[in-house]
Image (cartoon, rainbow over the protein chains, first blue to last red):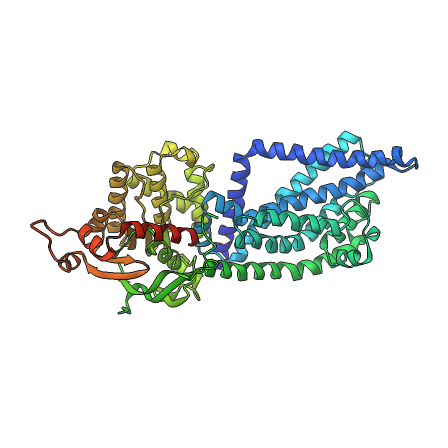
Length: 274
Length: 272
């Protein structure tokens, strides 16, 4: 019991520290939010522009929302991956890495609590972006099941966290370039997963990759919830694979990180300066 | 010889760093020593002699290539979480989240060590009193603090977790003489009060003489000499009428080719 309490206190310490850091950098948070909103609005205009350059009559509201969901998931994954990947990079930059890694907590608690914060923060940001962009385009969300979409995102987050932990290994083993490689990893994930298109338009070999990517299921599930107003319970085709992937990827992520931490400790990579 | 009652046992430990197209650098080369419970033990050595590598191995941040390290009987590799609960460290850089306040940084540490917030605040009040930190400034970002003040907060962080073994890695390097004196007095005072076992690495001979009961001289990753300070002084032949000092001992055992030493130190810093 005492051990559980201790780990819970440590988990809360990470959440509180990240919240305090977000608070201290609030002006930058506003700037990044504006940047993400601008990106999402651009995607919305691409949706709107399809009618004018194709000449076809399309449901513009549907198209904008379709693009917007891709953009929101992109933003959400960016935040999640950035926060998790920067578990190492940020601490190295602040020169606190050695102190955090020599504290008596399990690595699973360390990583999961950082992920927990990133999910809360990512969901809040995604909701804000959806609100701003729907207001900007005067989108009709009366049919959308926002709660079901949030549920799909939450279930998908389990496997995203697992992937995020694997991504966090990169800054651990490469202090200089690790964070940039995380961005490439993230871009590949979204390219294969149909962020602004259906995966069926991809070449067959890419489609095969798409079906093992959790982002594919998260995007499809969220789109059905928002565009067709489907209930969470009717999205089992997406939520069950997401859950199964999460059950596999989460422990795999923790295990992989621990293994690479051991490697970093052997090679002397776990240090303040790159 | 390894003592059964030792707070720290370092047994035939080596650590090498491999650099592309070069021979492995022996940062720590087959060293053995132990520290008794409550003792303050100094490790003296020039830059690049392996002091920080040794500290990082004891801190579980580096895994030795050979040999074993035990902290109160726990192996640093196999029982690393247990070891981490028994130790803390103060290093050259204070290492805090610079935008966060002193109190936010310290409460974060308390959380990591499972100390309830209320208990941590009470404990910190006592430590702040002892350290002489102005409580009004504790809500200011750490980046606004002077180096000496940051180092005092760093010491507060270490004592907040009540470590049984405290690793002091050149804690006064880069401090002005006043701040240095204050930090040294603080280390001495808290050590007396808490009875903590201390491993101090330094190249400040006065500091070693004031704080340590025994010292070892580390050079090129090897222990060249170890013992009580008076024993070390006696081991060096007198030159002229001048009394032999710990500095003479240090120079005697670490050689005189300072340029070559400096080059080696630079190389070590690059890879470790």
